[in-house]
Amino acid sequence: MRRKIRIAPSILSADFTRLGEEVKAAEKAGGDLIHIDVMDGHFVPNITYGPLIVEACRRSCKLPLDVHLMIEKPDLYIDDFARAGADMITVHQEACVHLHRTIQQIKQAGEKLGRNILAGVSLNPATSLTTLTEILTDLDLLLIMSVNPGFGAQKFIEGSLGKISLARQLIDGSHFQVLIEVDGGVNPQTAKLLIQAGAEILVAGNSVFKSKDYKKAIKGLRG
Ligand code: DX5
Ligand code: ZN
Image (cartoon, rainbow, N blue to C red; front, side):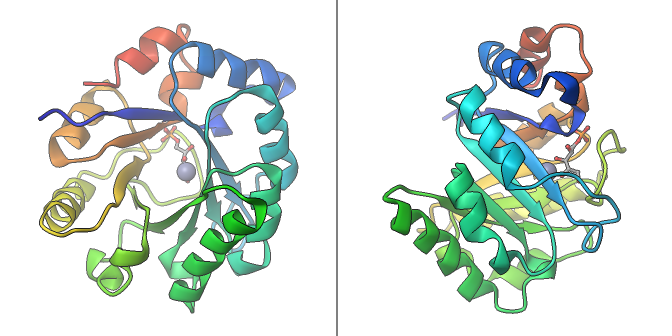
């Protein structure tokens, strides 16, 4: 059975002088989610944006908002991102001392607002999947980084394909309902390999927002 592939254009590569239009264009072009990269200049060496931009995206489209927190102490900000309209909140394993508590906090943030927020955990390229063995049952989403987080337009790390295949085997062989998302260096060539390996959500910054035709670019990633 062919898995449904979802494409998540990342606004990191969008033209911020026209953010609303860019998000609307990605929606019209067939994007399934809007991926929002939050960076704090500590966990990663770059600084981007916070809940204000999530809220602006919320007002610009109807697509689910996929918020990727590349920040230290994410617990302090989860409620703010939930209130701003996040539908999925992903934290980094490497940034959370009490990951189980943080995952519960994401779910509770949704409950407080009367809606479902998916709880995700991301792994840097150097972090093993085995670090999540005890928490997999609590996760809605596993975000595997295929570049070192911090910047768009980086080269895809081939070694991440093995981790994706392993995650797919692990999840398919269990009763867990965990979506597998991949982030970094996604283009038509790498997308094919990622889909074969078992990914079902592909984040794409440069290959969508730096293209001339968003619709064609998104279609070209579906494999
Ligand atoms: C990188 C971010 C990515 C970034 C991907 O740290 O998490 O979401 O936008 O950019 P591309 O698709 O250009 O590699
Ligand atoms: Zn991201």
